[in-house]
Image (cartoon, rainbow, N blue to C red; front, side, top):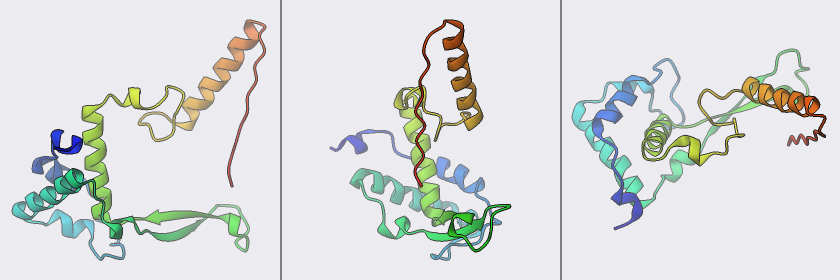
Length: 160
């Protein structure tokens, strides 16, 4: 028995709950499945979809089709429209992929304390941890160093 199959499976009631939270106003992706379609699925189909999700976990399989994204660009305000750097790329994934990822994240968070998975100083990809919180932490560290008459060094990296 694999490690994944030994863990708790995703229950169909969780799938149903996540389906009700889907945004129905978003347009369908290249697979033509919309949130509105998923929300209207009969209970038996939701159970079958949950079975598929659990088999994906057991087999450690993620459909290749769900990995493809439609990429659109959003113009940045106040930037010249003729420059490529004036646009922010957005990857639009199929809604079934996003549904599975939500259920998987919820399951991981139930089985593991999220605060132990990520270092305390990492603020990206953490609920209730924004850039403002990180700036506050940095300013506090600088102020503490100055008060204690210690050196305070920092390196800031940003990739293009």
